[in-house]
Amino acid sequence: MSLVSPPAPLLRFDRVSKDYGAGSPALAEISLEIAAEEFVVFLGPSGCGKTTLLSLAAGLIAPSSGRVELGGAPPVPGRRTAMAFQSFRLLAWKTARENIAFALPHLPSAERRARADHYLELVGLTRAAESYPRALSGGMKQRLALARALAAEPEVLLMDEPFASLDAQARELMQHELLRLTGRRPATVLFVTHSVDEALLLADRIVLLSPHPGRVVEEIRLPFASPGRGRDPRAHPEYAALRAHLWERLREMVLKDPQSDFYGRSET
Image (cartoon, rainbow, N blue to C red; front, side):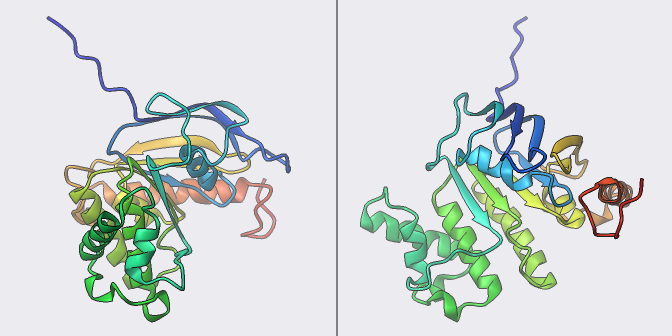
């Protein structure tokens, strides 16, 4: 009987550390393997290196030690990855369609327009194709930024607190929109958040990070993740216990972090 080996991870962090030379390292000895089409959420307090992990995955920076591999090779900036940020980073002088097309310079003009229109339709912004960012609401701007990232059709979508600036209602709508869109066109997603509820809604796996320097302290594969992801997990019998556990771990890390002043002087 032949044994079938599991597929190699799409993205690998192998004992990765990153030191910017300003105090303690941003990351220390991070080892993670991320499968194709997995939705991984990085959760942790400020100073745990969540954004640095995304920059390493995109090839925007290099590790100080260790190795990052995307498909078996060091990542380089390009079409295999796309990033979505908390700030929309839209070009104010370009229309919604032009903002998406601008991110597709490798395509012929007609194909850029067709793909931009396709992703505008996916996020419900077809009627706003000729509108400039100043005419769009915050939620519409975030949908446009998401459409621009998805239009590149990356293997890995890197999202740095993309919904943090939205009001509560728009944020929840965008969370479900992201699940819908990544369900229609699967991609590997690395998502940074400070929100326990957002992590529990979106993730297949939550990676909990400690601060100063960032280290992996726990990985949780969610029992209500895909193929059930997309349903509201709050009715799941394990949801409340997982939420309470994550909140307590975060609280402990903030209190014990000597660089945190959230509660005043940290407990010893």
